[in-house]
Length: 115
Length: 114
Image 1: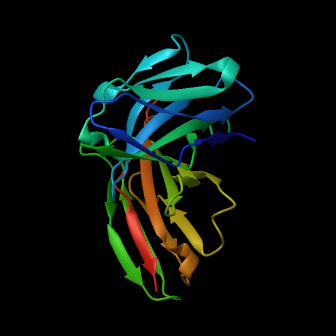
Image 2: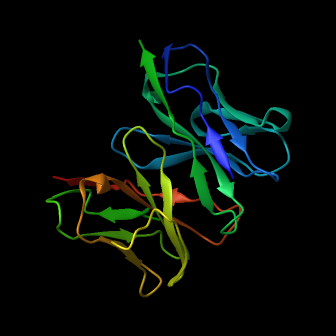
């Protein structure tokens, strides 16, 4: 069965520090992978997505992610975190069932940013 | 493009009552999805429509839940005889077509069952 694991429930970083959020997936074929961000009480906003091609994908707000098939990982990175990045981050894989439109989410990583 | 709109944003109801949530997708998006998110968890897929046809339902969608999209535009999610375990945020999303098209989420409808 397809699944997504985000090993870190909470992460705290200082403003200006670099960030890496981990995501591991379980999927039998080439995965479609996504990172979404959710601010408190809000819906989800897409940061970036990977379907094929270049394994390093650029997203909005200065985020990037790297797909590593050998490690079944799709980690999210940002070189310098801003206080406004404090939110919850979800990694997701698109399920083959339903034409790749059903998303399976990880449990999320809550990011806190210290001034 | 006004985004995915959900109503109401918050609902408090007594156990046993029925509730209905409405979702207006992005105009011309033919796919519409419902997800449920509980505290500390990621969203879980409930069901999706292509136009007016409901193509898939999760086993999470018990008999007390029903979703409709009568004219292929807006959708409703009704929960009958609510239970405390139904307390969650119900997220609606929409997309154009399949595959690589982005799924856009609304801001969600919070349900609290007391």
